[in-house]
Length: 138
Image (cartoon, helix red, strand yellow):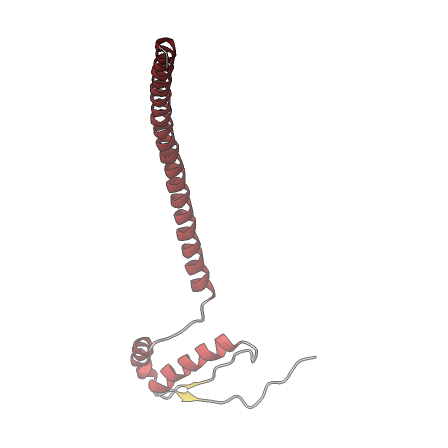
């Protein structure tokens, strides 16, 4: 190899090394900038997701409240043993009274609640009078 050829290849290698260093610097700079931007975008996406989660949690809480409101509105009336006992004790002074309970045959909820009232009145010493029959008018 001649001195001129060696000098040429040496210069070419130095230029290649310098070019590679410049490319390495540029690539590092681009990676650094895009990494920061990606973190900013991730943070924005995370904030948006957290906001959406909060909105959905609020909607879920409202749905639960509405469900409970509807459940209470349409729930069957009921009477527990303690309530029945309190009613019976207050009505014992009227013991011997005759009573009847009338509900529509198709209203199961009213029939069940009527049975609870029947128990409370019976416990108070009231006398159940069964209705013989109903006559329809018309």
